[in-house]
Image (cartoon, rainbow, N blue to C red; front, side, top):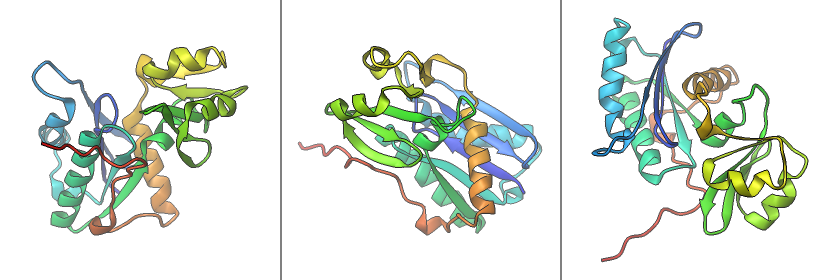
Length: 207
């Protein structure tokens, strides 16, 4: 069962090809000219060539649906929907919060910067965008996965804290493994039902 997985919602682009046992990964960083999501399509093509596969060999597509960068979420979901529609295959959407909860091998509490004095919180389920003062209470006494922008704040509350941005965690493989588990549980969708996870509404730009 061949799966293509990708994530442009967080601080890097991750693209992974897997047959359920072996994983082929590619990680792309932003550069001075382009945000990392700009390289998603070219990285998918490169990975398929390196594994002697074509898009027609794929059985599923899984992607991070957010929360995260609004541009990254749109890129992930749009590419996943377009490929799945053209190939007539199923998709699996996985939250970035669920992915990050598993980077230390458990199912840890996650709190990511949501701006506006809020954090996106996952504690076995998505709790939404929570006021930071409330998150302080949730975090106390628990192992926490966070990002660089909130690390200093929460490190005064709990010593058992990790910023996912400070480590080289196999996020692509974690995404893929979660997606396989969802497929086995019957949780997958057609391309038309794959939706971005906007916990807060996207920003509106006015002229």
